[in-house]
Length: 441
Ligand SMILES: [Zn+2]
Ligand SMILES: [Zn+2]
Image (tube, rainbow, N blue to C red):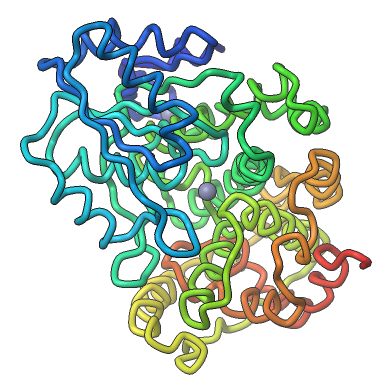
């Protein structure tokens, strides 16, 4: 399957749903930017573009994009976000309002020049003023290029805003290959999440009847083969390795767009990263990049699956019915609402799991699909990605705190909740951290 075969169409799927893909083109070549004016000419009514960049991405790709469009007689405006003191721009409500205030009249099209933060901000702003956007990617660091989701901080809380996917994604392989390697390695972590997140998704299907689609779940298998078998190719920035990671991130974003939720690419493993981000907000200890934390969260979730597979006759325990208010401080109210919604589903899940040979069936047909922790650890290690807690600057105690509370922050059922119900958590939390996440110094 080629990426192109999925774009700009509605797919009548065997799962019974129609999957709509609004993304019209993905251009990954040294000539990609040259395609931009014609492409935009086809899909945009007014030849007026507003580019949004930061000071680094403006250098790397902004100027060239600007020039290319001006040469094709487009009118171009540029907003280059300055670095806040001691850091780089973030995607939060304040920055979002700052960009909105600078727009005198909405352009024909917005162009995000960047990856994580810039792409999210422009997706959000363009959706608000109801104009299309395209992205010129400068790093393969996350899977949000082709998705409709934005994950901003709103009043300090990590939130999820449903916006609109871009009309086009443009990237030059040489720019992606030259991006700081920690960004590319973060992209690998975000892509790897799929090794366990699709299993969480299928669990929700089996236990709660959530719609599931094996076509969308399998959509990134093709590029997954390259980076799981040859992680060194990413470290070496070989054309195959860079292409595989860029494709994987785009497929993973498309899977979310097609299903209309983050379920295909985000499960219990992402909660580890979200929780570390929220802890940082509370105690102002810095956190690492999303994808680098997600890679380690994936290893943790995969270790949980590994343990669940070995449980023959589970005795299902009660889930803790309260959140830790002292731990969550000013975020407690938000966390409690998420947690209460999840608790409503637990009796239903327990009944389902306890019926007949359901546990055995689920073990044999669903849990077994999670990739084993040895494979995840090996891939992270060989790709030179964050593999141990020390790589993301997280202590053993901080990881223990995160692991003990991460089930509280989302209403969705994940492998982490199953591990609590079966009694693997909290009992084995420390053991799993020591076995998988704690490297020798
Ligand atoms: Zn489907
Ligand atoms: Zn992610």
